[in-house]
Amino acid sequence: MMTVFGYVRVSSSDQNEGRQLEKMNAKGVAARNLFVDKASGKDFDRPEYKVLRRALQEGDLVYIDALDRLGRNYDEVISEWKYITRELGADIVVLENEALFDSRKFRDMGDMGKLMEDQFLSLLAYVADQERKKIRQRQREGIALAKQQGKHLGRPVEELTDEQRKTWREVYPRWKDGQVKAVEFMRLLDVKKTKFYRLVKEYEAEKQSTK
Image (cartoon, one colour):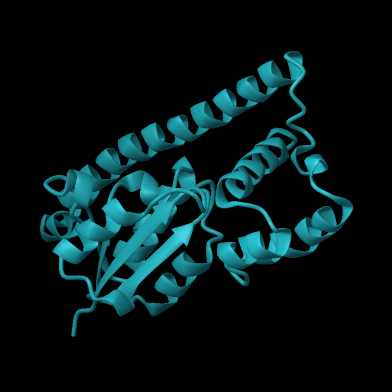
């Protein structure tokens, strides 16, 4: 019996996944079959995606909003798509391009369908990968400009007290792993929501620029 799943991804914890969830609800995806990650699309090392991958079986169907919600790494997106549709025998439908990206249609076309699927997938995955690279470049340029202007983005947590910085170092990794909720992290730091997400954004931007 086919199970219908939905996969939703936003890049960071302060982005809203509501629009994607509405689309999944419209498709009749049950809440228990919805998997939501708040993580970068640079690779597939995401907790909810891993659970979805283990749950998928032959004949199942996965809805995603757009191809870049699956991922932004050109080679890995293609590899993952083929693993799900060809090795597992499950199907993927990309809601943003539903008329074009429905693996069931390609499957029905046999070998010609595989050829067409490979061509379309390569094109869109390449676009997604290029967009990810542009985002990283804009981040690096923005950080470089801020430093030239004397803004200390490299030390966003320095404005915290010694006790708050200690809490940040201890709790931040657990929060990123989903072990601690954001509201609890804010309470432990004793900061407001706006300040919390500003610190997170600056801290993560600096970490990304040093990679």
